[in-house]
Image (cartoon, helix red, strand yellow):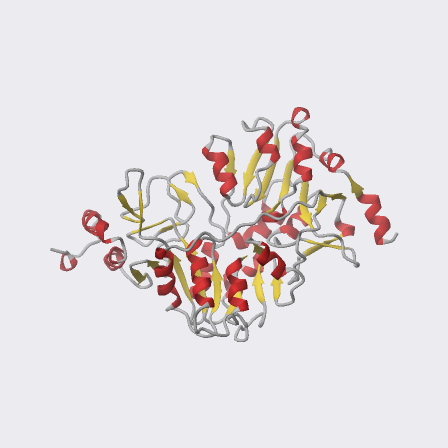
Amino acid sequence: MTLVDQYKKKLVTAEQAARVVKSGDWVEYGSFLGMVRACDKALAARKGELKDVKVRSCVTAYAPEVVLADPKGEVFTWVSWHFSGADRKFADKGVPVYYTPVKYCEVPRYCREEIDDLDVFMLQVTPMDKNGFFNFGPQCSHSKALCDRARTVIVEVNKNQPRCLGGYEEAIHISEVDYIVEGENPPLTQIPAPPITEVDKKVAFYIVEEMRDGSCIQLGIGGMPNAVGMMIAESDLKDLGCHTEMLVDAYVHMFNAGKLTGKRKQIDPGKLVYTFALGTQLLYDFINDNPWCATYPVNYTNKPSVVALNDNVVTINNAIEVDLYGQVCSESSGFRQITGTGGQLDFVLAGYESRGGKSIVCLPSSYKDKEGKIRSRIVPYLPHGGIVTVSRTINHIVVTEFGKVNMKGKNTWQRAEGLINIAHPDTRDELIKAAEVQGIWRNSNKRD
């Protein structure tokens, strides 16, 4: 049977594909920009016929129709590997949305060995190539692991998905696919970087000081890492490398400015290595069929022992709060889930394990509450329900707009002193009093 014959035999409508799902099933929707659209609508339309269907995705880029059709979660239970803005909005409105705590580099193993039975995996892909492969697009991550585990695999073709070269496990062959849906070819979600603030610029300045020619860069999600990338593009740094989980627009700017050559990388020299991409059309056009880029599953891109094979790795990630002990919360505000652990822990470990490497956690020193009062993001201790994303023993360098402090090898009073020194000046006296109460402030350091 030819590839064309196989294709025609497996081609179905979204409605026919959705009928595969039965009450009680676990369904995976694809991650990031690979979440299905036509199949989602078709499954939502079956709300009256089904019960107890669990649906999971990762960094939801679109508001799922199954959630919109069932906001009380009476039929469809929505689960996320990593909260996105859409997930957060649903949860804030009281829609039941559940988070799966993960160490991101381990997710392919979770899929193959640990999760409950996976009945149906639906995901967006590129059109089939001449060899019978459907490329996963900019969401390699754990896609192949899910394909390997699922009882039924349904691909939803979207001509707008860029074809992302690997690496490995970046595609699935038609022989491994059960059904093919030709989707409506919706455009990919555009996620521009947030505007760069003066605080972002100050933080970026301190971070770029920590880099050298040949550094291998990982940028996390958010305005501050993006500001770092843009500052690098305008700097005198050269021969930088890229080994990251998330590829963003800033990497394109760094590449076009001649800063990203990858010549000094010890593994994948010359390649921009990533496991997923989120940004604007500038980024999606850049990665499409681009041999400069290599997408890999997340158990390669994020595994600390792999990342650290490169020298001088510098990892940059955002935080919500850091307490005086050096514990980092990057995913919740008390009990309110905001994002997820993601790959932050992976790369904090990797940066310090790399020869000459550094891991940097950055955050603004403060924010203003509803009454306009300055509140510190350097806190005496994490609030009730706050999640420790990075433990105090692992944390390396913390940066705010007021400076930076190295946590490694520092005792409790040295940590408290260093962090208070980079807190907002208006909050330092209050933090000192708290440190005294907690027994982590030396009298010799007490201010008048």
